[in-house]
Image (spheres, rainbow, N blue to C red):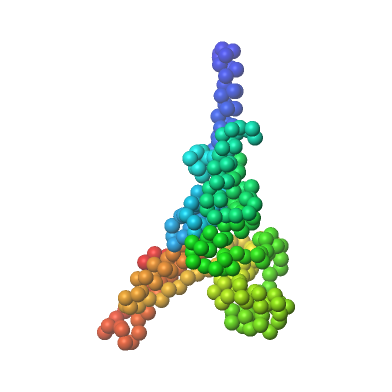
Length: 302
């Protein structure tokens, strides 16, 4: 017969192990799997990828100091923007150390060439020390410095006509695709803006290069909207299996010396779009050796 102490400990130990298995193993595993399936980009850390290389996260600010980049708000996380030491300064409004640090930041802002009223987020740290956002006032104050560092007119850097993302997300998007030259002609004809506004737009932001970039963004946004509508339809109808509609990338290569670079570019594009890709070797009568086998392709990896 078990003694009273053992009888009392066994339920406690059993309950502790059960709670550990549920809350420490099963629940985190379930949440991780669900997040990776429903929100893979966010669950993976909202990483920013450039040419196949991770250069940061959308959620974590970085301490840019070069004049060609926007400078974010100060950070009290470790030695500055340290994701392993996220924290505020914990200094009160009357702390001398806080006063001295703010005065030093104000002097640094003025030394960088920014004039006028300083935006609060240029000299105050966030509670986490990792805030990646820049307020419109702080961004506009940095336009002259960035334009000078990049050798661009300020009108190419400063953008006043903006639309919040939430407006596009709530809108029923219908894209009328026009080449930049045709849109510029419509602006000149007064079919988009009143004449004075059209002339100002053409002289500043609405250059052929900017319009081409905006056209690409609009088409991407429309594609994302169509994808979301398709998924809602599939889920609403309760269709089984995976909907066989997605981006696919095909690259055609030959014995040309540039084919290797094309395959690398296709691989980077497929990684960025999270899409399957196929390399197809094209053999023409002029390049085919005698008694050559039929052309073949390879998918995913070559």
